[in-house]
Amino acid sequence: MTAFAHWLNTAFADFDYGILEFYHRLAEKAGGFFTPFMSVVSLISDLGFLCFAVAFVLLLFPKTRKVGFCMIAAVGIGAILNNVILKEWIARPRPFQSEVAIFRVWWESVGAPHVGEFAFPSGHTAAAVSGMAAMGLMLQKKYIWIPVGLAYSILVGASRNYLMVHYPTDVMGAFLSGFVGALAAVGLTVLCFRFAQQKRDKAFFRFLLNADIRSLWSKKRNQTTSEQ
Image 1: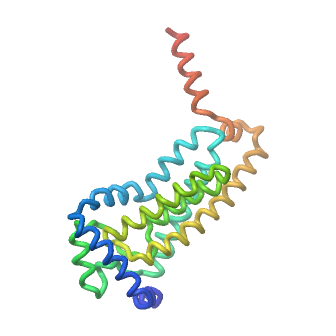
Image 2: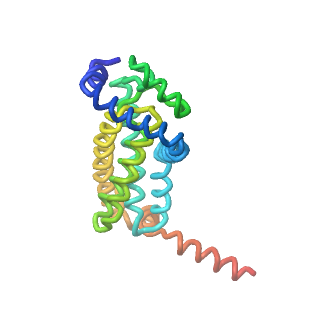
Image 3: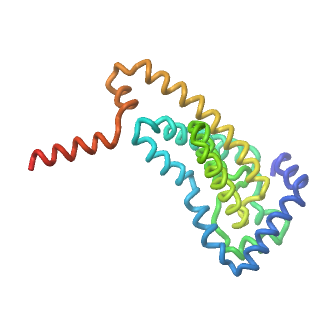
């Protein structure tokens, strides 16, 4: 354990314990009713799956292509920042691997979900925050997506705490690092699409900017009809 990880465990011990105890009590009082739901939320947020799925759909249309590109870039940048750099550098053990034995009991009571080695920051939460913050920043006039993205990100963080695989401070750290990843992705997206606009006389960049799945599908359907 690094000095920073030790500081987190010491300085926020009461904070982390209190919230994890709340989730344990919730699971206990509800007889595990919420456990399948939290497991599904955790599953669809693994490796930014839901964000990638949304981004793929947005990439199909020229009006939303920038947003889809930005979401993918944000999740990718966030993964490098969180999973490759911060987790390995900070090396904070999971709650159930700590000296607080009760955390392992709580983890086992919700099914002892399998996880990687280190905890800080939460990769699932960071991916959710990165992708959803990128979408919100790129769709500034579509204000409805900001609370939707925030609610999803909070739910992902809650699921990781409920399953006892992350401290609440892991989730808080993920919100910060995830937003940093989103900001970096917005800058990268602006540069990439500005370059594409400058090179739009080239067939590849023209296709990148203007291709629309609806027109491509329409052409294919018309071609099939004419052949018949």
